[in-house]
Image (cartoon, rainbow, N blue to C red; front, side, top):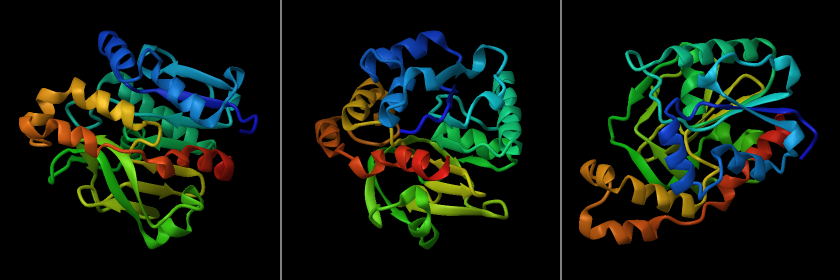
Length: 251
């Protein structure tokens, strides 16, 4: 990658015990941000991590771009914590500074909320596992999906989604059967995806095992079909290129 100075704003959770459990079981002992850093091959000196819930947020003048990953917090009214609202303000300040933003899953939802958009419970149910997304005509022309096929698999895990009626000037870049807004373009240098390009099939299988009981209750699979469901989780190599596409084309 280039020598872009990356701020990874960690919005995963303010629950330290849950964070440790996720790092141990889902990320196999690595910290979540390492999945991102390794994908873009960023030198440690050019990749700073800040836990959003821990206190004061940095000055974006020290960075060339902002990346936000997934979150277990729900950015919806009555569930938003004080630190989440501080993040919304920070996102608006970053946008005012014209710095590029790449948001993944929770990063998408936090950015949408920061800009006054609506996050809703997915009326079609939770989307979990390896799913197919399809690029819209606008998405086919966007540099985020440079050299990508029209349809390809991605790893997905979310129960909330962006309300389909987007704000003026926002563009839907990709959709899926259960989620009509899988990727959004806002202006020239903000790109947001609802799915997880940073996760591989081993991460997703581990997450399915960790949340097996809850997922079964939600109807994602039945007890007798759990092994079959795990086998349906497969590689999503095309999606894994997206973060580098963003680095290359938007910074």
